[in-house]
Image (cartoon, rainbow, N blue to C red; front, side):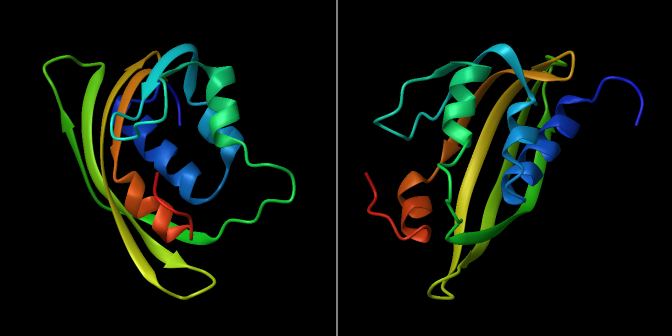
Length: 138
């Protein structure tokens, strides 16, 4: 592919990198200075740099994901601002240990400039996501 990716293309790359657990690829989609918030996560402050996102995305050594997931039902809405998209989708998958299926609804409001995410508000059902990973919701 040539040229700068569109905001929709960056979004698709991000969710696929997350699903494939290609954490560095996900991190590389963000600008050095960014503003990423998870408004539904009461215990998390916005992440304002690629370095902070690296800590968010990078699992500890030896970590093995307890889930497998894919993004489904993706709907990307362009806005009057060419840098901003609204993406609705679900992460659907299975908890490996139990075989239990799950679906986690999401809405991302993203600003992409020069092919990098400079701002994102990621509305995710964190309680449902935690349960899928076998954790207690916070």
